[in-house]
Length: 416
Ligand code: PLP
Image 1 (spheres, rainbow, N blue to C red):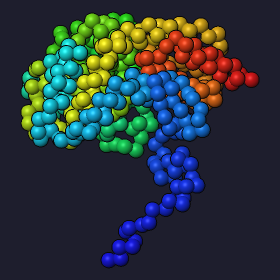
Image 2 (image 1 turned 120 degrees about the vertical axis):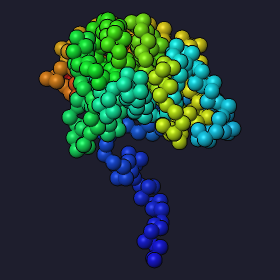
Image 3 (image 1 turned 90 degrees about the vertical axis):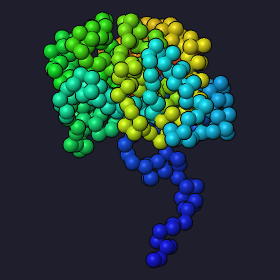
């Protein structure tokens, strides 16, 4: 065999002339449409681009960077742990996993936790747990378990998860999809109740829908869902990958209505903005469905992730980030609502998870994000019409003023 066709020389000359963004376009799949800025450094609420410009981060990597970029306490834990022990697999115990799982359970008030990496994996874990609970505890006939989901949900990009998405683009070309999901309107407790059958195992719901465009359900919805699920003998599983860990101004968005789900999905901020760390967290009865060999992940619960995750939870509580998110979130919401511009159709949100709905007749959300970028504020459009404001939870009033002024100015510039 002629190996010269297999081993190609590294073309350093082409990398020298092309920008990193051009290389992304040349060698990467086009599954994202990034704003035209190339970032190279972050510190707290700030991001710095390759041209040396400073930008205020108002979306924190889709809510993953709650502690700000490069939080020194978390970076210290990351570096120390990386030098000591990073990845072992779950074939062995490590000195980091147990303390991390205890921190997850004690912080959330739940019984047991199963560590994974990405949010989608943890949602898949929740689906498996709910189905198996349905068969083994509720005695649903084999192969018939159903999970009720809410229209507008976003839970990741696996084929099972996009299969129950109501977003046509997320599904287009990726079927066939797994059966066993029933969709009801979000925020409608009566519709949930009406959809329950003897084969229903669980209701899987985001307390505030993030990727749908920051949709806050009517007050009392989650408490009603809790009551219905308990009375009808199905599990309530809350996907708090985005809303959890302080983002909405409470440790869990469930706390706003004083409820505990049977299963809870955490991700994003659990990795301290440094690593992908997620977990499925549940009651004893639900987690008891997993036995050795049922489920796993090579990287899930690795010592590096466990150390950073434990430190992130400690920091969240010590720095009272939920309270800060509530105070700064109320402030941001009020200041955004005070912008008097016809392009703003609605401002909605909870804590520091806020969406500004732009009237499509005035501008697209993408245009607004580009105008914000020109003013040193980074955000991202969702669903064409929504600009999200979800800064790190350490954001201060002065940053909020800067972002609000930039938005008002951006909208003025788009009117001309
Ligand atoms: N669940 C919710 C509510 C999310 O917002 C997301 C991501 O945005 C996910 C799950 C998927 O997380 P990941 O992108 O880490 O797979």
